[in-house]
Length: 451
Ligand SMILES: Cc1cc2nc3c(=O)[nH]c(=O)nc-3n(C[C@H](O)[C@H](O)[C@H](O)COP(=O)(O)OP(=O)(O)OC[C@H]3O[C@@H](n4cnc5c(N)ncnc54)[C@H](O)[C@@H]3O)c2cc1C
Image (cartoon, rainbow, N blue to C red; front, top):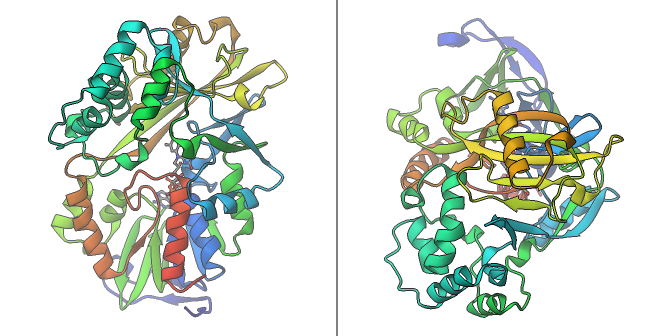
């Protein structure tokens, strides 16, 4: 990949391009989007690329926000990974600003905290619940596995599934697990029978060991990670560039935003796949329609600054109850965060679909419902809430409906055939965390001949 001298020229090609200024950029690779995927790509590729980011700040979903002396993330983000190389890179990038923690997460069930994962703390349940969970785990007639619901019953049995997994997943995905595929479930830890038995008689065990220890920046929130990568990036970052059109002409990629057209040799998209297809010239109708059919969930994040929340030392608490708006709440006093007024961040996550009855509520209504819900369950007192904030994230979770893999294959085959590379959570349309996104960026950079 050679460097191209910067030059400005008049384009005489057809369509909207006629007589508009075209910048042949000095960078030969365009990276659309400056979240952790875009930043990592630039980090691994080196100097020969340019990030085009629509926001005035990079970081995407990994960004954090400051209000009244408190730092909030867009939902509970922590640093962990089974990928040793990427984890070590994260720790190296964050050196001097990273602390190690032991997981303390729980499920709120019948007004009790049951240690996460649920099946590793059955002894915390009432005797009848405990018996039913254990009995149905041990006597578990296997179903034909057609969907995510079947998978849960097969792995965990009726008791655990119906008490926690089914309602929680229904709540977070806003889709019946019966309408969801199973090609993502390796994320969910499968319990060894021995652990479940031990947990039932009260012998402490830990499930999901990959997340048992995790890290969190000492200052700056999770955004410290993308910021650290950004500092090490030698490439050009153009912020405030909303990519509005993409096309391939004579083996060059032309990327258009409000500031005109930019030309590159290679193109890597980290922006959401359905949007990419909607701005890509010449995409066949069946490909565009497959991209439109890909489903995602949105997220509403309510951030409260609360004096002495009653979190019982937990960081994340999961709420399967359908009369509570939020499915997970993270308590940042776990990390010792507190402002001068003695408040610490409490962050509630609420999934929704744009335009549904939850999304349509006003910010004030949602904040009020969160305060009410957390108050009713005894986690906070209304009089201790000193500050509030709400953010809406349109693309937060990839939803694995039953048609996803077919639709994704159609889109991927087309984009591969025209040489348009993708990397990242919504660009690859996979339920992946920042570590897997960074791994994907490293692999792609090396495929393109870097590193
Ligand atoms: C609630 C929640 C909790 C999570 N917890 C964790 C965790 O504990 N640990 C972890 O590692 N990961 C976690 N993740 C996952 C992590 O946030 C994502 O995997 C990661 O941030 C995805 O990065 P990305 O760069 O692929 O996408 P994004 O972060 O979505 O970045 C895409 C970028 O593209 C830009 N963009 C979009 N459209 C355009 C356009 N038209 N023109 C130019 N730029 C554009 C956006 O502004 C954005 O900056 C969590 C995610 C959520 C939602």
